[in-house]
Structures are given as C-alpha cells and as structure tokens.
Image 1 (cartoon, rainbow, N blue to C red):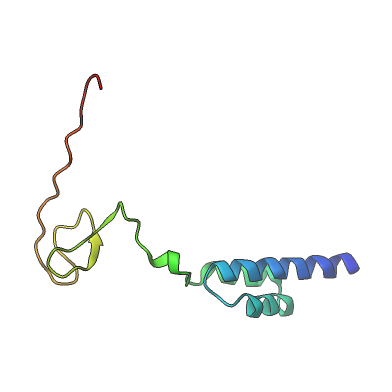
Image 2 (cartoon, rainbow, N blue to C red):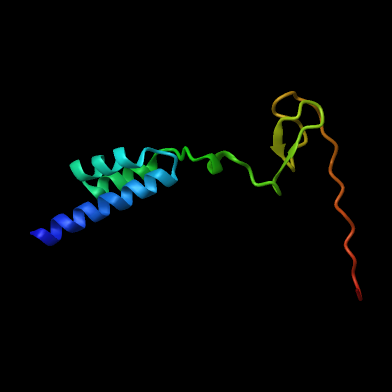
Length: 100
C-alpha cells in the first residue's frame, strides 16, 4: 500500500513538472494530480493548449516580416494576412555545383 502511495505522489510531481514546462502552475497541477489521478491530470494537461513562451514563437526559417506592416508571416506567403499587401516571390540564393 505504501508503494502505491509513493508512486501516486511521484507521478503527481511529474505532472507538476510537465505543467511548469507548458506554462502552467506546477504546484496546482501537482495538487490536482494528487486529488484525481496523475494519469488523468497528465492526459488533460497534454490535451489543453501550451502556454509556454516558446510555443508561440515561429521558427525563424519558416517566417519572415512583412515589408509593409512588419507582421510575422510564412515565408511562402504571397499575401500578408495582416495588411493584405501582395508580396514578391523570394529569390533563392544560387547554389554552387562542382568543386569547392
């Protein structure tokens, strides 16, 4: 019985650490996991939106700033989703084939 209680608390702490990494309150999620179930709280945590700051940052290689309004848009976009400006097709840098 003591092993089950120890495992329950350890898994609840894991849920709390995961919640902290996802921009949520770790202590609150640890308490929730202790009360309902670490498994249920962990599943619920993975289903809800990630609030961490790194989740909303676009990958720099996939996004550029609109030259008209400065909004962050996809590199492949032809029209800015913020201001509606038509964008020029980006030129690919030439690649060298042959000996360096």
